[in-house]
Length: 124
Image (cartoon, rainbow, N blue to C red):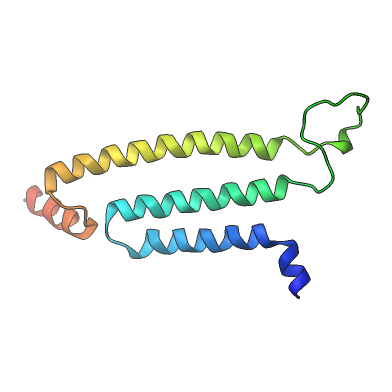
């Protein structure tokens, strides 16, 4: 059992991080804490993709002298997905933070429940 766990340590850490981020996203009412939870979930997904893309004993996907067999290299697609995901994640985080600043300027709180109540009062 211990050998099985040690073989999949990164995957287990990714699942634990995802759970922490998901719990933070669901249970906190503060918008900044929700954004942090979403970023922790993103990081967990990137860790999981990177751990799945790594194969012990293979080379990075950079051609080496005399090695032309594709099975000697690690698949570059997971690394590309992680890099693309990081760029998208930074963009989404920037947008969420900008919207949070706007909400705070208008309602003077970061509590999502209070924002909803104040927004409903403003509609009437």
